[in-house]
Length: 229
Image: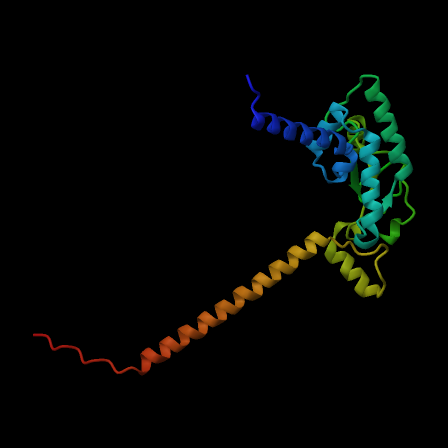
């Protein structure tokens, strides 16, 4: 019985493609940006040990280093403490301990939440050197769940935009920390403004057309009403 040349050719093509895929497939950390994962995706990868808490923390710190100079999203970055915590969470996982969905997950806290041993300013000059001695309950629970603190994020002074603006206007001084710039938020704001302007234009055009119609109808002679008996 003669072998089917087409089947043999198809087999060779499939085998070659599969071999190339195995050879060229990069490591996970190279093929996917760990810092772009959702919390659920990151937790699942850590649980399966496809990635480690150290890998994830390093990826997030690298993202902060790249974008924070432009966005001013962080007031304080706790790089050394974060890496120490990541190594501890990785060691626990190797020993078979798993604290739950937040085990080894990097997080950030707004700078109006106290953190023991880490400067907490509420973005105010009044507290620029304030270092709390203890953690509030929310921070204790996050740490006990295995979360890794990357740092403290920026905010309006005392988280009150109107107060912060009034203070700067009254004192004629700049804010203690650079203004937070969210590129995605700015783009959305520009789009909303463009949409608002476009809607206002169409509304104004519609109003003008209605005025012209009313003027036309008021100037058009009307036929006399038919006499009724």
